[in-house]
Amino acid sequence: MDYVEFKILKAIADLQVPYPQADRIRERSGIDAEDLGVRLELLEMQGYVRTRRESTISDRSLPGGIYAAGLTTAGKRAMAGERW
Image (cartoon, rainbow, N blue to C red; front, side, top):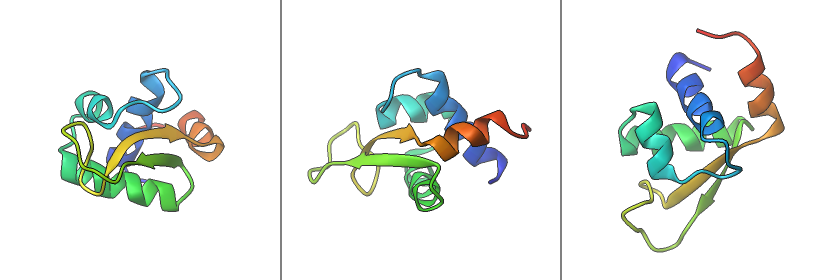
C-alpha cells in the first residue's frame, strides 16, 4: 500500500460512517475522480475496502459506477499499522 492509498483509507475512516459517499471521499482525500475509482477497485481486490456501485452513473459516482466505499476489517487493521 502506498501513501495515496493510505490517504484514501484515512479519508474513509475520518468520515465516520459505514459507507461514505464517493464524492465525500474524493473531497477529503484530494484525489481526482478517475484515480480514486481505480484505486478503490485495487483496494477492494486487496481486501481493504468494499465498494457499492450503481448501474446508472450519477454526478456523485466515480467512473465505474462506484458511489460509496467502506473499510473492511483488514482496512481497519491497516489504519492501525505503519503511518506515513
